[in-house]
Length: 116
View 1 (cartoon, rainbow, N blue to C red):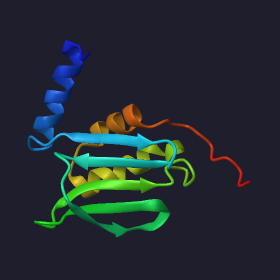
View 2: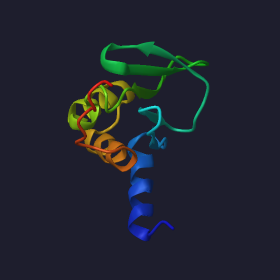
View 3: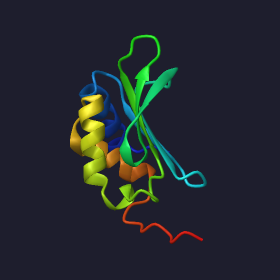
View 4: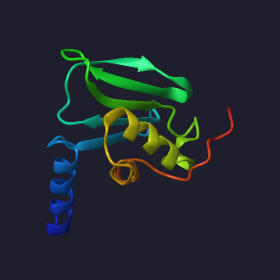
C-alpha cells in the first residue's frame, strides 16, 4: 500500500515530467532494465553502446523510454549516475528523479559474474 509521502513523490514526478511519470521495471532473469516516460505505448528503438536502447514513440517519434540490456553485465548497476545522465538527456527529466526511479526498480552496486 502506498503511503502519503510516496503518493506526493509520485505526484511531484508527474508534474516534473510534464504530467508523464517516469517508470522503471527490472527483469532479473533477462538482466534488462526498462525505463518509460508516461504510459506504455508502441515504440521503436535506437541501439547505442553498452546495451542502451533509446526508445521513441512509433506514432510521433518523441522520446518514450530507455531499455538497458545487460544492466548488471554491462556494469550499469555500479554506475547509476552515468545511466541517469543518459536517461535525463534522452527523456528531458531531472537527474535525481532518474536515479530514484532506477534505484527503486533495479539492484545497484552489483559486480557482473564471471562468464561460465
